[in-house]
Structures are given as C-alpha cells and as structure tokens.
Length: 212
Image 1 (cartoon, helix red, strand yellow):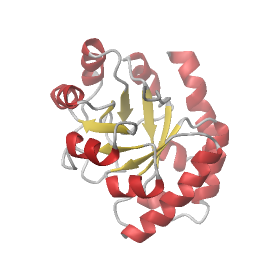
Image 2 (cartoon, helix red, strand yellow):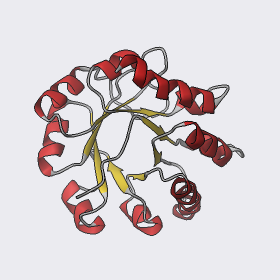
Image 3 (cartoon, one colour):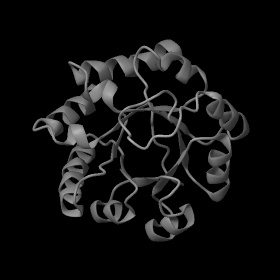
Image 4 (cartoon, one colour):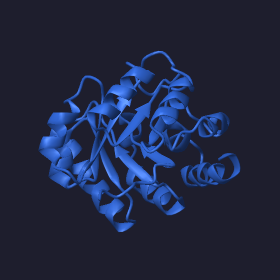
C-alpha cells in the first residue's frame, strides 16, 4: 500500500527564491522547523540546472525523511527518485504519468474548480492541489481565485483523498482554509519571503493544532 504523506506544511519553491545564495540553507532550516513535504517547482531554469537543484533537494529531504515532489517534470522525478510529481491541467495526463512512474509514486493534480478536481480523482490522482485560493503574485499565469468552495465540495464527496490548498495563503488567512477541510497548505512566499522562514514554518505547524 502506498505511503500516506503529511501535506500540512507543504513548502513549494519558486524561481525567485531559488536564485538566493542561501536557498538550500533556508530549506534545511525549514525542514528542521517542521515542513512536512517539499515541492520543487521551477519555470525558468534549464533542465540541467533543475537537475542539480533537485539532486540537492533529494539529499536534504532524504536526510530529514520528508517527501519530495517534483512539479510538472516526470523525467526529473525519475532522475532523482523523487516521491512523486504534481501535474497541472496542461501537463502529461495522470494515466501517462502513472505508466512512467509506476504504482508506488505519488501523483497529484492541480485543479481550479470542483469539476477539475473530481475528474482527476476519478482518473486516479492521489491528491488534488486546489487553487489559487486567494490572489497570488507568485504564479504569473494563475487563474482567478477559486475560494474555499471546491475544497468543501471535494472533501464532502471524496473524504479519503487529500486536498491541498495553494495560492496566497498566509498566517493571517490560513485558519478558514484549514477549517474548510483542506489536508494541507502549499506555501511559497509566506515562508520564503518572511524575515525568519523557520519561525514562519513553526507558526504554520502550530496553526494546525489551533485551527483544525
């Protein structure tokens, strides 16, 4: 049986923060502070640069026994033996990714609507990333915020499938997201761009105890 991952504090990378010289030091501090999963997401790097990053992240996540998910790139996930991939609506289909990755890897799918999420779950997706929940400047091609209703609907119909909220989530607005039924918070700027990323990680982890 496939391992169930803890997505409560799901740290996602971004091109801006990957350019920082201390990027991997910050990542390790956040892993120590309580990040429960990591997604490597880069849009503007060469394949070789992405491979170097992913290899370093695989070493760190293995050290702290935290799952590493690769955004979009099934080939990169295979190259570093990541724990899975997360696919957008315009990426490889779930069925093709499953054939390539085999039965044991996690495959998540992004959804902006209940209908997209439902279709992905029925196709076999292990988890759904719903968003953007709030307006976000991190993803330039982000769709309009979908709010919390897709989370409510998907968790009502598919309570066993993890639903991860993404997009504009901060410590100030995370409480209603958790209370809507989300199983995880995918976070970029609210951790990477904070004055103390490890402290921000701790606060998000503590939020699950306060707000769940």
